[in-house]
Amino acid sequence: MSGAIDPITLSVIQAGLQQVCDEMDLSFSRAAFSPVIAEANDRSDGIYSAADGSLIAQGVGGLPVFVGTMQYSTRTLIEMIEAGKVLAPEPEDIYIVNDPYLGGTHLMDVRFARPFYREGKIFCWLSNTGHWPDTGGSVPGGFSASATAVEQEGLRLPPVKLFKKGQLDSEIYSIICSNIRVADQRIGDVKAQAAALMVGEDRLNELLDRYGDDVVRDAIAELRVRAAKQMRVCISEIPDGQYQSVAWIDSDGVVNEPLAIKLKIDKSNDELTFDFSASNPPCLGPMNSVLATTLSSVYLAMRHIFPEVPISAGAFEPLKVLRPVGTFLDAQYPRPVSGCAAEVSQRIAEAVFAALVEVLPDRVTAAPAGTSGNFALGGHDPDRNRDFVMYQLSGGGYGGNADHDGLSNGCSTIGISKAPPVEIMEQAFPVLYHRYALREGSGGAGEHRGGFGLDYELELRRGAACASFVMDHGRFGPQGARGGADGAVNEVTVFQDGKPYTPVHLSKEQDVPLTAGDRVRVKTPGGGGYGNPLHRDPEAVLRDVLLERYTTAQAAELFGVALSGAPLGIDTSGTQKLRTER
Image (cartoon, helix red, strand yellow):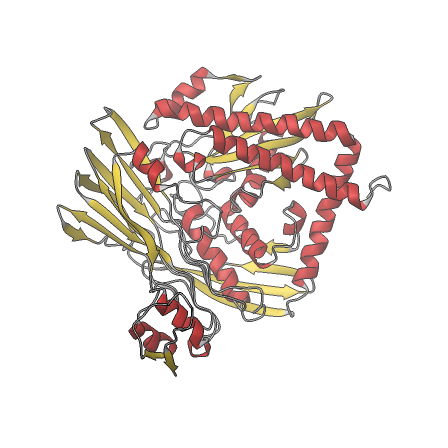
């Protein structure tokens, strides 16, 4: 590090870079049209190296799974420009790309990239990703549960300039609009996504003007070195050796058989090597994962375990992921991939947790719900005389850990997106929610139990629509750890004309027809339990029963605690007690 940069200045610059990304995130959400971005915050913004696309900074409110994929896609864009495969950048250009095989996730995650210039040269790249509610394909919302080729999932865009010198290319935009549903509503998201990058440019210029280009450049290099050192120190907590685990995916949506993610981790000195080569081969359905998402899933899992390590490309350097050639975790064209970011990525993280929980018992949790609960509903609203595409994501229980119970109805492992408010969804779409509550009893039993999932039910109020689901953990619940029980499985029930229907693949189905009055009920998984349930504090069991999270029968069965002697309830003085027996 240059002697001119003192530790305080280094910290201020680090915080300044973070703030630039945070303001981009905020601007994107506030200006976006679609509830999935504006309310759920299914987006991310970051700053990337001009040399190799490596991550410099990312907003704390952005999805963690985009940490690795946006780095990968920016690097790919730079390489394609250098090879002459993509038009060279000019000031105020913005590239658009959603090709999963070029460093992406699924087709609905659309990335923008803008070169940031200082004194006529590219200083870095500003990039963001937003989840568009639809990019075409065979089903509204893009989550085709039975796709067998990526073309069935939507429009695939290579890197092209959507904005040239600040002006929207109307021809390219018209091609996009001609291939997606409710195209008239996308301009709001497009302008919001572009505006966020412009905000980032303004804020980054202010930072550079204050400290100078050379000082900031030196600080970025030093921050990367320090992040790598800090991750290596954390890894040194793990004894040298080999650690293994298996995580299961219910099915690929086409073949009704589970898929195994088999992981072997080799720890040597201050590095970890991740080997997924024994996992299943590529699958027919959309549960394949592209390499960028597989890498990012490992990175985000380690961020969960060592959250004190700053977000930087340096933090990934001690993590060696062997390319899982010939498995469904290294998808090649034209394998379908709509479930890779939202579902497969979370199973990869779960495999990392399961492999390391015994050796890092105070840092690693039991498995979380591990599904984004992707539910898309597309149809026609006769009252408004327009088509609609509704996308609902949902939370679930977190796994218990050495210190406390798991969080209930938490966001997915891969991101901090929150479910859009019920009131917003009912205002924007012809639906009515009849239930939106914690799923009582869904947390896996343990000394520290898993958190509870979500239980919601909605009705189509008018018109006709088709429902599609790409979820997981319907066959296997989230894994318990160190003697804890698994969390409850995901459940999907569709009521057509009052008659219940459960998808053959449990939580994967597409094109389920709905008419006015039909309902959909989803119960998301609870987190896995941590530790022997018989070691749980009886007072904690009592509290859960009093709050109606478990019944007295469940308390006896799961935790070995018998409750008797008084009606359930807590008086205002707090003196009422129930007799506990174990």
